[in-house]
Image 1 (cartoon, helix red, strand yellow):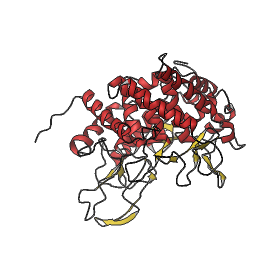
Image 2 (tube, rainbow, N blue to C red; image 1 turned 90 degrees about the vertical axis):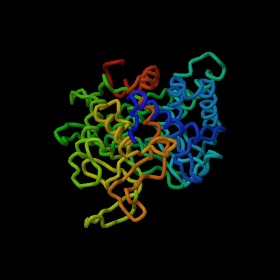
Image 3 (tube, rainbow, N blue to C red; image 1 turned 45 degrees about the vertical axis):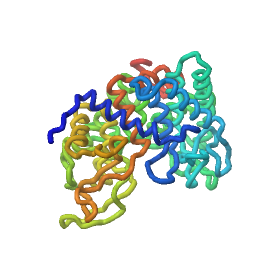
Image 4 (tube, rainbow, N blue to C red; image 1 turned 120 degrees about the horizontal axis):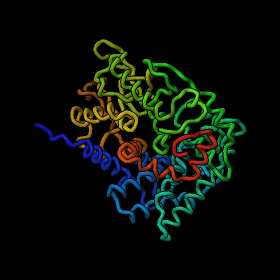
Length: 431
């Protein structure tokens, strides 16, 4: 049966709409919290909630929801975070203006003894700031959105999160104090540093950014010179909010590049890796690539066609040094749409029309698939049973940045973000 292939615009619109349905349905409307993943009795993720907040303006513009609906939801979310318990108690929602990574969907309290997460709080606050810029009407409700978003952002104590070091720690636990890891090496923490530098209340010192940049690794892979990070999402998450096309910090000025171009190269390196397919996984090709932090079919070791294969569950899959077990994340390829549409669009087509990965899924693509993992119960390989909120957001938002630049244009009007970029030493373009 021949399928009628949609135009690119229609295909992208449909993918955005289906992905946005996750935020529409996997939510507690009372507190605005968004489910981390579609599993029974699962908690909310504050990063997914931040991505939802950033997606509501786009949903209004695209007619996926009314402005009134979007205002209600946004306001419920902001009121919840403003009024939720902040303190050192182990069952609070947050502390020092930061929030726990995972929260109970109903009560909004910390679950799983998880960490107070600096990076996930950054994504949450970025979503709040986007809402504050977009909802600019003089109505009482939209005014309250702006007031609350501002107060929530200003409450975060970034200096505390440094724990007397130069760089920012990954987080804190009431039981054991600060986590030993810090944000070092190029990764998704760019947004965290920019928001921390931009704060009018407890800003990071400029030296924290310099210290972070000093841990970068510049490499040449497949003939591309770039700032290395192996998982694809690390080259995307900050770019969901920030348009890096015409701006540079001192590091990129010296390299005669910028972070947008860097993500383009990182995307091409992923593409090249899949074509080379050094470990001979099933299905890798010019239209099937995208390795990132994601779930997988493991942990398990199987002998397949005489080769012993190790499969992982949730792990930061990376290119070109691994880990790699044949698991591909369609969402990670889609989120590179603004950087390299010429290789992303064929990947989207391949996933929709050849692999039929959206069929029977109410929210578009499932998180990941692995065509090498063949067992008695998986004759055609493995597909993740889950959708994750933090995968849906980048699909919706980066597709929109490619189509209209909506979130980039919203965030260019955010004084805190602009201040943070300037303090980090960015110049050029809209600065």
